[in-house]
Structure formats: C-alpha cells, structure tokens
Image (cartoon, rainbow, N blue to C red; front, side, top):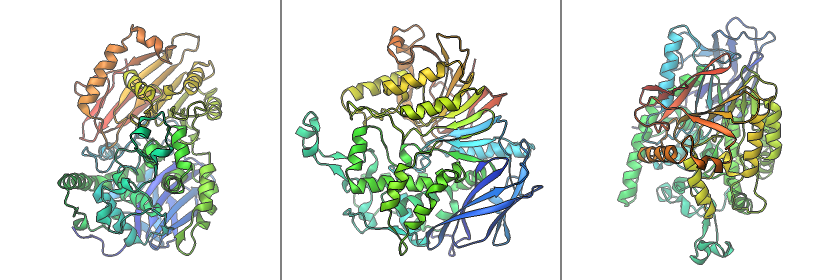
Length: 614
C-alpha cells in the first residue's frame, strides 16, 4: 500500500492529554508546519502558553499549557476544543461522543488504567484498543471512566525494533525532513537493506583483551557487547530514528506517510525473511488499532515513566555496564539519544515542563545549521536528576525513577545496582510520610515472584546478571532493607498501592508486616505487557514452582530479604493460569476512599478478567 497521504497533515500526532490539574492542563501534539495554537475549555476562562520544539523541516513538537485563574472543577467532564490556525481540530476518530474532546481533573482518584511494555511487532493484540472501548462505554453512560492512564515503562522498544519498523523509520525521517545528528563514526552500510538484522555487529564492544582474566569470555576471546539486548540486531542508533519511532508508536497518521509496499526484505536469508514477514503482519495489526489508542490519550490524562527498553535493555543494570558505556563516545551518544527523546515525548508532559523545562534552552542551542550537535546538551541531560514526580491527589500519586539514581555496588561492579540510591529512598520516605493512602508507581515490581528472583540470583552468582535482567528490588541488600524499613514505619500510609510492569506477566500480591504495630496494607499490582507476553508454558511452570518452593509454611521464606513481611498471592479468574497471567493486557484499578476495591485486566483479545482480593 503506497503512502495514503500525498500531502503532510497539519496535525501529525495528538492531541495527547498529559498532566492535568485544577490550575493547569498540559496538552502535547506534533504538527508538520508552524501553527498558532489555542485551547478552549467550556465554561472556563483560560490562557494558553505554547512551547514549541522544531525537530525537522516538517516536524514541530508543541506543549500547550492551559492555565485558569479560577481552579477547574474536578469530578465532572470538561469539554475542550483544540484550535489550530484559528480553526477547530475535531477529527471524528478522537471523540467519544462526536461532539468534542473531554477530560476530568483528577483529584479524588477512583479508577486508573495502568500498564507497560507496548511492543508494536509482538504477535499479541494492543490492549489499549480494549481500554479505549471500555472508556467509550463509560462515556456513553455519562460517566467519567478512568481518572488517569499511567504507562510505567517501555513505551517504545529502542533495542527491539522490527525490520519493517526500521525501514518505516527511515522513510518517515526523509518525509518529514527530520534534522539529523552529526556522524557517529559507526561503519554502518549505506544501504538500509544491508543494515536489517545486522546492526548489532556494528555496535560498540569491549575487546576481549580488556576483559577480566577471571571471565571465561577472556579465554574464549569473546568481545563483550555494550548493548546487551538479545534482540539488538535493529537497535535504534541516531537521534532522528528515536524521534521517528515515537511518532510511529503514537500516530496512525505517521504511518500514512509511509509506503507500506516498500517495506520488504531483499536478503537471501530465508529465516530472516520469515521473521521480517511475521513482524510486518503484527505491525499492520498494530497500525489498524492505533486510532483507538490515540482517542484514549486525547480524552484521559496520561502519565509516563521510562524503563530500560525506552533507551536500551539493561540500562544502568550494573556499575560495570555504566562504566563500559561511559568509556565509549559512541555508546554514550546512543544512550543520550534515548534519554533526550524520552524527555521530548514523555518527560516534559509528566511535570508540564516545571522541572524538565530547565533543559529546553540547552536542547534548542544544540541545533546548528539544521544539524544536531549534542556534546554540551549530553552533559546537561545526564546530570538532570528530576525525572521522578508526584501528583497531589487522593490518594497521592508518586512516580519513581528507578533508572538514573542507582545504588551501585562499590565492592563489585558486576553486581546488580539497587534500583534507587540512599538519597532517593530518603526522599521517597519523606514523600510518603503522613499520607493515609498512596498510589506508587515503580516500573519494576517491589514484591516479585520469589522463584524467579531465586533463578536470577543464581545467574548473578555465576557472574551473568545481564543474561536474565537481575532488576528486582531485592537484588541489592541496601536498597531492599531501606525500602522495607520505610514500609514498616508507623507514619507511612496505611494503604500503599504499588503499580508495576516490566516483567511481561501480571499478578496481584498483598503484603503486611509480620511484626510491629503499624496496621498497614501494601498491594503489589503488576500489569505487563500492554502489547507483549511472557512465554505462556514457561510462566505456568514458574507459577507452580513458586507455589511449591515458597508455600505459606516453607522454611525457604526465611532466607528471603522480605521475611519480615507476609506476602499473600491472589488468584486470577483468567483461564487456569493460577497467580501469574501471561496475556497482553492493561490493568483497571478501582479505588474506594483511597483503598483498593477491584483489580481487573482488560486483555488485548477483548476479554476482561479480575483478581480475587479476598
């Protein structure tokens, strides 16, 4: 299918509702030309401030900050109108009732959609389509539906890119005239076909001569890749590739600028051709449901947080990994490209440019003669330490950055780093104190599956933490102890609901202290992936193994770092999978007066399931 749009659309992506509060609403969109923007909220007097970032000859990223001298009411739907060049922008596919776009200011939170891990070329269905259908039904009944939509990591897969997606990215770069960065010095082939499934060969590596003589790889003369993803063969490298990838993940109009007929594999490798064709079919299915995801994001406030795949697999997993990246100019540049693109498309909307806006001038100064020169900005964005944020709602929403404030193991750089260092954990403690209820977003589960964490510990003991992504809170002694101590404090919330993803399966655990007088309850609600799955036969085996090894009275529980806490598993109504559910889904969390009332999964297949909270 040739590109359906011969001319560039005025609005390419969005509008997407981001941080929404009574005093200010942040709306994000991308246009293909300079435009005047305004937002009108029915029944309210507002003013608009627009921040624009030019990313190409025909690509402009805008943030519209709508302020109101009188606080916007919460608990009711507010209709809004996006005005582009003095004309209303109201495409039918974005509206639930064919009248206007609408939202509600989240204050007393009653329902939240949460999920992570949205891989466009995974064979499963995009569960955002199911979530949009559910939200549409609520609006038809005159209800608000969900108050927030929270994506807690892996909104894109920079390290796991389909062959057809890589070709589409190149087409979109050329079609929009995206500004390119200065050459990195990688010996990549000029022919895009020659790059397909071969990029991992050109990515930086640590030569075997520089590896420890205690490592078997030294004696096997095996170089160590800096980018350790097992699917790095189409890894994003250039900044403009990251920009185009975001557009293709969140805009069906971006795909209409792509000639789908030109997405084919010309190589002679039959296995790679089969992989390419399979991924292409999954992408076509993803594109078909993209308008539903866009409608959801245009009518419900969206919050986000990065995890590793937004940048690369194993991002900052160990101090040794960080050291290898820091000592190589090209590796550092690729990581920075992932972080800069996150800042643009996810980070600034999370806090409505309050802290993240400090970076905007440095970014703009990086464009020199229509080419990106990021040497100075790289240092600025790597030093930036305020990716975490919170919302003053009830319950309070606290979103954790578990990637850039790692607690490194100073004795052994090959040991997994803690997900947050001491300073950030102390800041978290201060944030939680004196709140009755908190909704805490941790990309990786705080309370995971013990059997799986044991397997990870075995691999780590063998010196291979990167093989099985040893990224759980309990993998680092200091971080685990401090976090548990926080939960046991008498002045921390009586109801803490932890929303996590990352692991490609879903589960529901409840946690209470075995000792102490703090009558609190902690819920670990894990939903993953939105469009991704863990191998189902393997997850069933691990579920049974965990049930056997770590039963209620098993002595093995005494050897875990959370032995002071009583962890209860809650079964799912989905099939016969027991406690762990591997099926593409996004969670629907229902609260009553700040306490968990219901935990459901909206599956990509269209079905709904729930966890028994009793």
